[in-house]
Image (cartoon, rainbow, N blue to C red):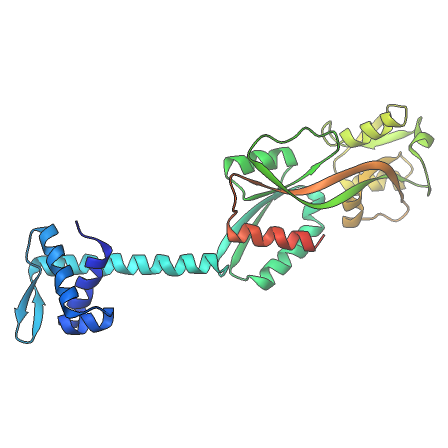
Length: 286
């Protein structure tokens, strides 16, 4: 059976027209080159070279196989270069699913550092809720899902691996400073969708009441604008305030209500080099 060594030998002999020169290039002895050629001829069942004076020439079968050998050896060498580039972080791609506030705060800084440190790595971003991000991660559509968990969040299914990035406190957003949740038991509240308002509802219930949600929006700019206009109060995580702060609103941290931000990957370690590089950068840019 032919193998890559046999094909390399044939390709070198064809290029030089000499067993001696091929042996020098490959750092083999002449008998070794002749041995490989003999094994290749035996596996093919045909003569591949003929003696011609002090050199050799290829038979028609040898010409055909040498042409294919050049293609095969070239592809293998190209693959070796590509893999070396990938392993050395000179090339690659990392796909990230993240939610709005993390994509508008820590990710841009991390993306800039990734580009500066590893300009050959391509970064793809998609804005989705963490639940959808985990689905995409499990399906192999992204390499990293940026997610958050609260103390009462159920554990993810087996296979997900979480790397902690930062803690993100929850804030009461109002027109007056130093407010408490209890001060707004009878106020109108601005909340997001059922899934997004969960932290706010939980915090209010811990304070002894259920918020009366008068306005519903997931847009953190609209939330703050409504509060600034005196239309109600709201809660927002710290990253949302870091991304945008509307004049005329005050933020008071709600003790004991912090969400934890993680970079999630899926499957057995190790992760691809580009994925590992970005996670390490995210850990230092939070």
